[in-house]
Image (cartoon, rainbow, N blue to C red; front, side, top):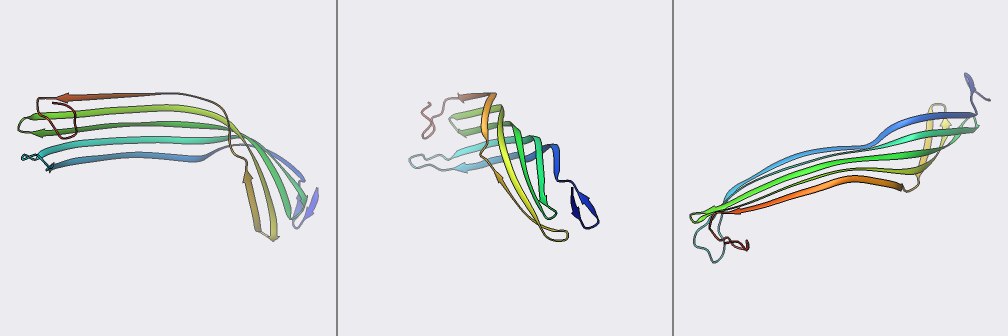
Length: 171
């Protein structure tokens, strides 16, 4: 034990922790509704479209930490962490182009779910400049991947009711 003002501090400390160090969630929607004119066409094309995109991702860091206090004002620590990364995302896009001759509709959906595992070491230090004022630094090694699993799928459909649109390749 090392003496400190107001009591004693332990020289060695062991802890375990679970940290969600990265979390993000997006839910986006958009609508296109308008009329466009194209070179070489006398009739404008009406466009109607919608996009829905969502994403959820979380990274967990799980593991033990050990800290050592070489003096009353200095502390050094190391953590060996297992990383778990969970990603879920998807999108649905649909657009309809129409004129007096018919319509062309294109739609696609995409879904992905992945889980990754890895490891990482974290080294840290802390120095108490004056009572209750600390200066610290942390260094993380790059994450090392142990494995990944997941699935992804996409569907695409194109429907035409007789008109030809610029660049579509469909008639």
